[in-house]
Image (cartoon, rainbow, N blue to C red; front, side, top):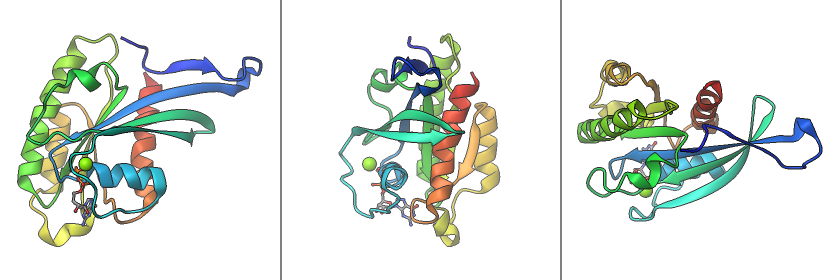
Length: 187
Ligand code: GDP
Ligand code: MG
């Protein structure tokens, strides 16, 4: 298992030029908004129609607390719950488990992912941080999952909890990804 953060000296000369790497995977039911959040984070734009079958990994250089971090984001596309979790369990340094606050089923679907991660973390050298994300905060009027329910599920699994929206303020989405990186760095 790789270290939580791989420290690579990019210039080979300047000590201050250390380069950190962080792999983040987004998990959750189809339609929760994983791709929309990924695209928002990477481009600051909201793309409303995104191929629901497309699974890909993207790279971005982020500055977090004055340090440059090479961030890889795996946007998964499970169609009916977790399939073949090995592809990200060993790879990821942090997990973002996403549901949609206007869809109770998507919330229930998170439990499978949280269970798999908890089980994996128990046997691992490092506990990889997990963030439970209630997405589509702009759909408040159609809310089916209360903030208290989200928060309770997160604390049962010892993870952080945030509510966001892929179509509102970019900074809030960026903050969530940066928080994941900061959590990894804490280890
Ligand atoms: P994924 O299957 O988890 O990757 O979900 P997508 O990112 O493809 O999003 C599924 C649908 O939800 C799309 O129609 C998106 O436009 C919509 N969507 C995603 N995020 C938000 C959001 O924050 N607010 C609203 N209102 N719609 C969203
Ligand atoms: Mg998708």
